[in-house]
Amino acid sequence: MRDVKLTDIYQHRIAQKYITRSGIAHAIAVAYHAFQLAQESGEDVDSAAKAGFMHDIGHYTWYKNGKWDYDLYRLNDIHAIKGAERAHKLLIRLGENPIKAKEIALAILFHTDSFLPGGEVVRTPLQSIVKLADEKDEEPGGAHHYRELDFGRAMKSLEILDNKIDDYLKKKKNNLNFCHVMRFPRKSVTYELLFFEGKRLFHEEI
Image (cartoon, rainbow, N blue to C red):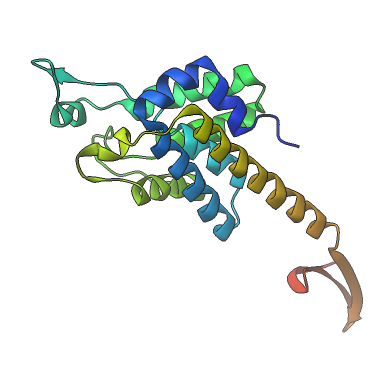
């Protein structure tokens, strides 16, 4: 049972203001990519999808002479910093587990190198997933931020993804219930083997 779902996040006024402003179609696409990548690598699909969905919640605009200036924006970019704080505050407000909220916020913080003086950081697997998911949907000149999607279609897409996450977590939990342990003596030492879905996970002396 997840404490917070993607639809809960999207319906909040903070998400409506900031995620919509930075491109709801892009946010949903990255959430889907992050879910798939996390599923393939065995990472937390729920945290990945949430971080993917909120990764640009810290975006803002830069204008010069009344026109959007993408180069100026890139020069002054700190959206990952603003987004990590904003997402964490929103998740806590919605009732997310504090440990998970921090993990998601850090994945948002490190989804880009644009704000780092050196341009490099050692990422956790989850942080790398969110970065890659974002890159999968990028378009030249930031065009991915301007793809449009109405509220109804956005909600439907998020409901589908929420169901995918729930189904995956349910299946994973059911599979864990089929884990079994075998103990046997070998040369006067008893070993314990843990099997999961027919595969040996580890063994240790007991």
